[in-house]
Image 1 (tube, rainbow, N blue to C red):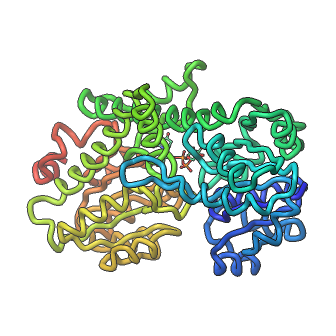
Image 2: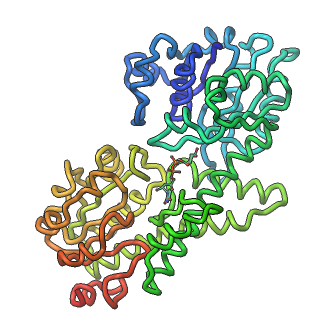
Image 3: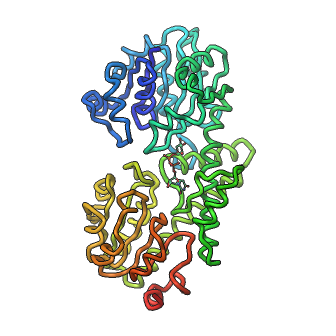
Length: 448
Ligand code: UDX
């Protein structure tokens, strides 16, 4: 099939490359001429494991263009993968996707299918159908919803080895077209859920809200563990062994970030409010995740004591999770901003995102490795679970530091080992340094 993917961001590019891998002839279209120029030269705008390889391997079937008018008229399917950012009131901003639908309408051939890949609030596909019908009266076309469930860092395998494919269609022809697009994956046994466009859109929001809810829940349990001398790692593992619950997304940490969870749960809450079916659990989750980040920032500042100005801090990790250079809604930005405001001197190591942080905060020094970042630091702070950070030799780290406080928001290290080395080690949901709380770091050091 000939597929035009409109939008070559993280979702559009992954989708385009994977559809080419499935044998389709794909044109990735974007209005950003620089991006298209780079893509044509094999330069990807994002870091995503395996994507460069896939793009290179299918160069004959995966092409890029700014010229939608040239390619859309021969497309069997146009995939809309443009951005749907969060607007100021927490609702979703659908202007780009509505414009895309309006732009593509006059170009389509009869019988073409528009498939919405961008995450959109339920009801959007139906609204887009009206927009296209209005912009191109008399055109015979279908409009489908085909949400993605791609995690950054494993997007290619999430696409090609998906748990399920959701084919949202309100007419049999759209369902048939989507089935053909995904035929190779369906033939491999990946379950395809055929349903209405509204259901497909809601499945995406409900899935992300459920995953975020699990993280929010285990983080609450982690808070309790810190107070009652529990260990969230053991609790979470045992809870996850219950087959009804399962182990995924039960890792306690600094709260969820990234470009999807915070945005999608806000949009779901706004939808519930607007349509008279409030989502109180989701609303509580939003507040709780925001508050958690603030509480953790306070914990860091407490550890720096009353005079944070000029004190050296090593920040280890900046991306919102390992495997990506994405800083969107990363707790690192919140923590670094607070530290910069407090006057601390920050050296930051992240294998791929350090430079991007120092572009936002010019006073932050990017460091080539964790030990360089920790040189002379009074406090080291782990924010992202990169393997390079998990592999840190704590003895070496302590030796280069001027102080001895290690705050680990990803529970990468063995607490006993860290403390045996003389580090004042804070982690998440595990016993705090002996018999003292984080509020008074001087007492803490003494107790160690
Ligand atoms: C998510 C969804 O997983 C994906 O299906 C959707 O299409 C896009 O949003 P992504 O944003 O790439 O993917 O990240 P994900 O791996 O889901 O992690 C999101 C956040 O939750 C990160 O900040 C991560 O650190 C945090 N997280 C995840 C936890 O704190 N604990 C966990 O157990 C899992």
